[in-house]
Amino acid sequence: MFRRAPDRIRDQVTFTFDGMPISASAGDSVAAALLAAGIRACRTTPVSGAPRGPYCMMGVCFECLVTIDGVGNRQACLIPVRPGMRVETQSGARAIAEESHL
Ligand code: FES
Image (cartoon, rainbow, N blue to C red; front, side, top):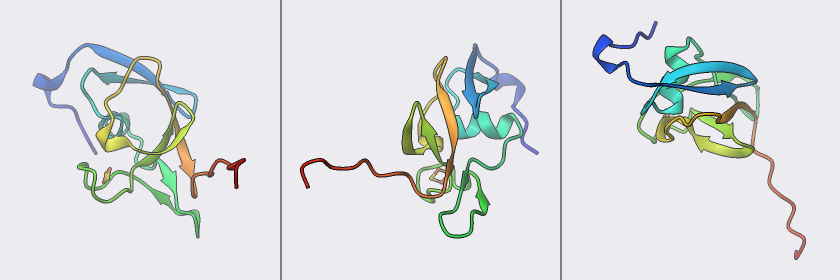
């Protein structure tokens, strides 16, 4: 469905998505790299578990939330790929760390 324009191919960057190596072009957002690799869903909804994927590609819809290097609720469309980055599907709502002082 999505193809990279020939003049947009740059140095390659490799990261993982759910443990699978993904090759991207330097400067790609995580969302663009996932779509270019044929991955259309990157999170599931908290209520029904329905798959969701990047939609607006400009930080408005929040459909692209993923976990990056262990940190949840990251907007994949706003974060550039980095070599070795570990991206994971965000399943439902992000876990909130327990506050020890409450
Ligand atoms: S795709 Fe809409 S906020 Fe990322």
